[in-house]
Image (cartoon, rainbow, N blue to C red; front, top):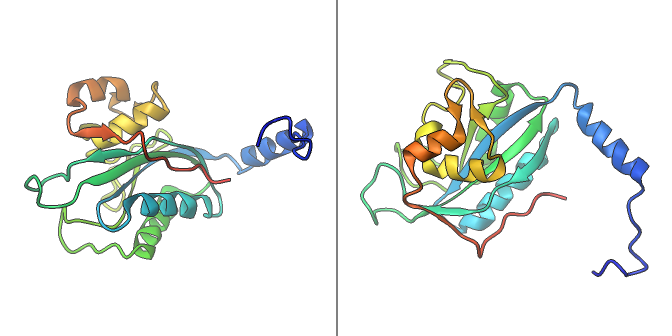
Length: 197
């Protein structure tokens, strides 16, 4: 729709301010970085479904979604599995990390994720990469994600969203990405994930 369409009224500034304030009153929200991956079924639809499911989570707002990247599966022979579609989302949330993890697992299960082999193919992977500046070695949820800083399929889309981002305790995403390199991570400019309305 063109901006000259008379039926489209601009949103009053007071409403915008209220919405922004409501976002702030997610009492003391924390920023979290979540990586999404899929290599079975309709991969783009699955990733979009995961973004929408995150947005539907009480106490969570999806603030940004990265471009979609196509990557080779990790830890298996080339061609042994379909390629992955990967993306990263930035969220603001009042959920503690443990609840965010539970929600991630519930979303995976909704897409019939099967955890039968390490590095096996999966319909959906939802991983908490970092949560504010929390550093924790809790085996149930290690923060930041113990391997994220070595994985281009996490670092490349995260760097797209937030070029100045830091991995808590490990330093700048840009430096880590320079060390890891971008090999095997192809942007799919023809695909796009929508930010929920």
